[in-house]
Image 1 (cartoon, one colour):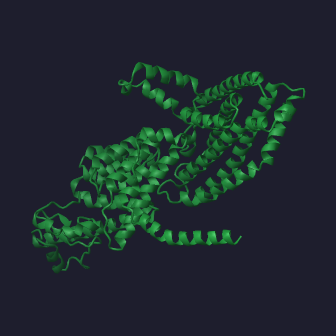
Image 2 (image 1 turned 180 degrees about the vertical axis):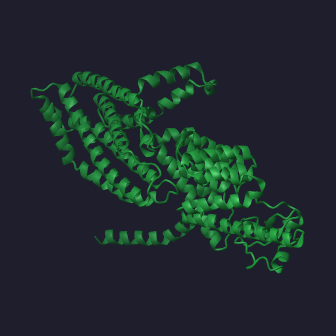
Image 3 (image 1 turned 180 degrees about the horizontal axis):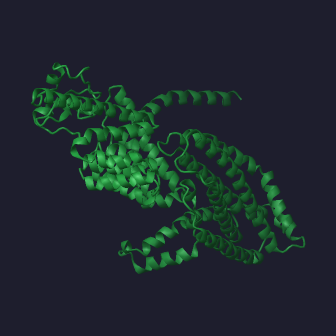
Length: 296
Length: 263
């Protein structure tokens, strides 16, 4: 009896000693490892047997948890660049297993465009999803936005928005097709898109990223309006944002939620040193070298 | 034979299998929490998880009840006393199969009710864009149960030729995995992508495709999760396939069992 109890106590002690380094090790495992390696979809399909939808959902949740963790780190001022390519690979695998999984399309759209700038890849994925989710207006809505805003393919965008309008039965998308599908309406287009995304988003981490971007674009819009008023008053384009502020046309002073500074490009386009990303702030030198602003 | 079915059912309940299922089914309570992690499809995810959990529990039942039922009887020498009664070996075996199959149906019904509760709870909290079609969900669970009953028949066939439970249990698991991919393999073999494969492999794959049970047809999860319309004709064909295939397996098992030497 005493022997059993003492063995138990020793085991417990050993567990106590071991558990701390063990959990620390797991916590500090590199992210790439955490996201894991996904075997070929054909192999996954075979092993998944009749649980393909479950495996697909697990892959999506894995990416979501990973990304959620990174957003939290960014909040604590620890900017870790996400492994977007692994994220994309996992989501592509997920829709091969379950082509109806909305989370995968939705999430891929969230980062493939602004962050990774793989607009064509995003639209190809959305086109694939549209073949299956024939009732879903979100997919053509996303694809329409990508076509108009990033790819400047207004004809295609109009087709997508038309489809989104037909599927949703809402006039919003039909009017989007007409109103914003021109170069001048870009900021408004982005604001409408981001408002819709932020409104429907339930995941706090993602909602936050949408709201921050939305705020940034609202500031851009404010500067654009003030800039145009300045031009009307003075008959010329202002050279800097400060000029507009000093002219009393822009109060309060615009603030970039990503921590950057707004400036005007040579053609009067509003840009920011943060490039609309937290990790972009350190790249201030890029303005000097004439690197284009990355709103598009 | 009905007596054997009744005895089998009673035996399963006496072994506390049902309580085991209930403990495993506690996982249903976690489903709404996990499903709420989804961004755009909470209800769909809770349906996915519920249906997968049911499928997993039924698989365990099919493999272990189906694979050990006959073996246990022979091992415990029940067969000697039972077969001393005016009862043919065939009807004894079919009765055993019937009882196990009935239990799987019963478990599917109970788990189906639990899934119904979980999904309605999830959809009440996070209303879904797509209406849930409850009848599709019920049919999906029914066909899942049919699939596992077919698997039980496979397990019985293995049991009739084996003296231990290894072959029935592992053979059944292997059949389950193989039966799930035959359709995929068959389609690949008949597609231009398989040019590099040798004709012999192709032939072998085709033979296996017709020989092994095709479980792919019974999987209606995607229809239930995303409320897609069910292919009525396809379901009829699948049901007919089930009847014929189970009939074939049982007649083979009965033939072997009646000739088997028991010591």
